[in-house]
Image 1 (cartoon, helix red, strand yellow):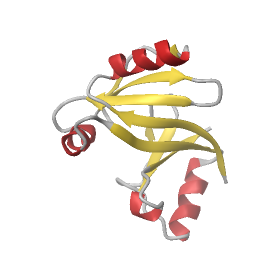
Image 2 (cartoon, one colour):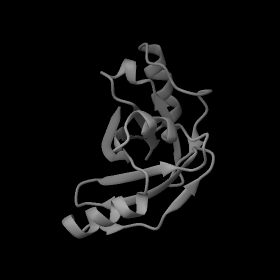
Image 3 (tube, rainbow, N blue to C red):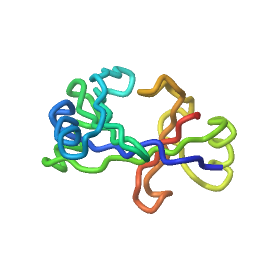
Image 4 (spheres, helix red, strand yellow):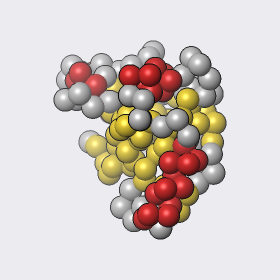
Length: 134
């Protein structure tokens, strides 16, 4: 059901600066910063040969990333994102298996312009999981 790993997200105070380090160290292609008000973050991607690293910084004081950074001042891995062919079918199957979807369960448009959902970390060995329609 799960497809390939789409990205690993790292919460940081300054997404552009963090991505710049990856661009220099790993010769990664760096995207423009994209604000996502519905998610409360600004994202910058570093594209590597086999996946992407998403740097997320808070967009406003109500951002869930602001709270994460209060607890983890140096930043850190926030979530992993996997691709799925059909996000509604994947959501329904995961719920049937006991996983909890965060929010209202309705997919929102993510950084790649595709529907995404987040799954509760307590159901995935402590890791916050994002699924994105491929």
